[in-house]
Length: 395
Ligand SMILES: *[C@@H]1O[C@H](CO)[C@@H](O)[C@H](O)[C@H]1NC(C)=O
Ligand SMILES: *[C@@H]1O[C@H](CO)[C@@H](O)[C@H](O)[C@H]1NC(C)=O
Ligand SMILES: *[C@@H]1O[C@H](CO)[C@@H](O)[C@H](O)[C@H]1NC(C)=O
Ligand SMILES: *[C@@H]1O[C@H](CO)[C@@H](O)[C@H](O)[C@H]1NC(C)=O
Ligand SMILES: *[C@@H]1O[C@H](CO)[C@@H](O)[C@H](O)[C@H]1NC(C)=O
Ligand SMILES: *[C@@H]1O[C@H](CO)[C@@H](O)[C@H](O)[C@H]1NC(C)=O
Ligand SMILES: *[C@@H]1O[C@H](CO)[C@@H](O)[C@H](O)[C@H]1NC(C)=O
Ligand SMILES: *[C@@H]1O[C@H](CO)[C@@H](O)[C@H](O)[C@H]1NC(C)=O
Image (cartoon, rainbow, N blue to C red):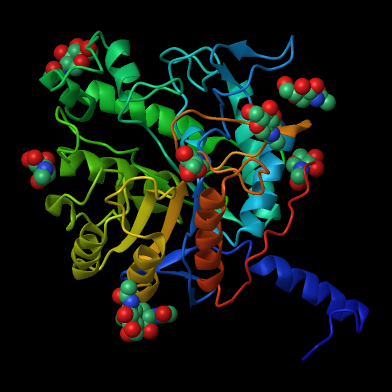
C-alpha cells in the first residue's frame, strides 16, 4: 500500500484520492444506492432549521421576522461535527429546500427573490461536504409552518383555504392539478437548483453533496395520510429535477407508499415516516419498494421511545439493517445543539422530539435512546462502538 507522504507526486495522488469520493455522485442500482461502486445508505438525522430557524431570537440588528431567523454559521458547523460523531452519513433538512412566503424566505412573494436566504444554505452544503456528509431536502411542505409550503402557493393564486380544517377543502388539490400553480412551483425549483454556492462555485444542481431532492414533506390530499398525490404530478416534478440536475436522485415525498406511484420511472426512492417506529409498516414498505425495484428511505422516525406502542428502536433498526438491499437509510427527527456562539445553552424546540447530543440535562432514558441510535449508525459503517459519548467541540 502506498504511503501518502512517501513522495510529492504520491501525496498529490493521495490528496486527489481522499477527495474523490466526496466528488462522486450517489447512484441507484435497482433498489440499492451506491457510492464509489459500493452500497451506501443515507443514514442519519433530520436538522430541519439549517436554512431558516424558528427557535432563537437573534441579536439586535440581525434579520428577524418572528419566529424566523437565520441560524449562525457556528450552529450549522457544530451540527455537522455532531452528525459525524454520531456516525451519520447524511442528513435531511426541510428549510434547505422549502423557503417560500415569508420575509426571510428565498421567495417571499410570488416572483420576488431574497437571495440572502441562500447564505445559510450555501454554508450548510459547504460544511456538509467538508465533513464528508451528504444531504437531501424536500422542496415543499404539506403543512403551513414558518418556512412555507403548498398553502403559500395556493394563496399566491387566490386559493386561501384553512390549513387546519378536517378534511381540507378539496381545492387543496389545485396545488398538484392546476398547471399555473405547478409551473410557479417549478420556477421556484429552478431558482433553487440553478443557484451557485458562494463557497464551492457549484450549483446545487451540480453539487454531489446534495444527493437527492424530495418532491415534498409528508405530501397528501384533503385527508391527513390519504397519500392522495397525483402520480402525474410526482412524475412531472421528479422529471424536472432530473432535467435541471441529471445526476440527482428523486425521492417521492408522499406520506407513505402509494401503490400507484411504484411504476413512476423518474422516482428513485420511496419514503415514509414513523411516529412511532412500527415494524409491520416498515416490513410492508420494504416489500413494496423492493418489489418495484426502488430504493427506500425512512425519512423521519420518533427516536424518543416515549410512545407506548413504539417498537423498541433496536428491533426496528434490526429490520432496516437486515434489509440494506432496499433500505437506503433512516433518519431520526430531530437534532439541535448549542445556541452558538453561546455554548452554554442548548437550543430547545417544543415538538417533544428534540435530540440534544451530550446535553448534561438529558435523562438516562434520553441517553439510552441516543446511544442506540449512535450504535446503529456505526454498525451501518461496519463498526462496533462502546457506550461513551465522545464530546463534540462547540465552535
Ligand atoms: C446492481 O444490481 C444487480 C442486481 O441486483 C447486481 O447483480 C449487481 O451486482 C449490482 N451492481 C453493483 C455495481 O452493485
Ligand atoms: C389555475 O389557476 C389560475 C390562477 O389562479 C386560474 O386563472 C385558472 O383558471 C386555474 N385553472 C384551472 C384549470 O382551474
Ligand atoms: C469561485 O470562482 C471565482 C471566479 O472564478 C473565483 O475567484 C473564486 O476563487 C472561486 N471560489 C472557489 C471557492 O472556488
Ligand atoms: C394514491 O394515489 C391515487 C392517484 O392519485 C389516489 O387516487 C389515491 O387516493 C391515493 N391513495 C391511496 C391510498 O391509494
Ligand atoms: C427525555 O426524557 C424525559 C424523561 O423520560 C422525557 O420526558 C422527555 O420527553 C425526553 N426528551 C425527549 C426529547 O424525548
Ligand atoms: C436479521 O437477520 C438475522 C440473520 O438472518 C436474524 O437472526 C435476525 O433475527 C434478523 N433480525 C430482524 C430484526 O429481522
Ligand atoms: C448564554 O445564554 C444564557 C441563557 O440565555 C445566558 O444566561 C448567558 O449569559 C449567555 N452566555 C453568553 C456568553 O452570552
Ligand atoms: C439545563 O436546564 C436548566 C433548567 O431548565 C437550564 O437553566 C440550563 O440552561 C440547561 N443547561 C443547558 C446546557 O442547556
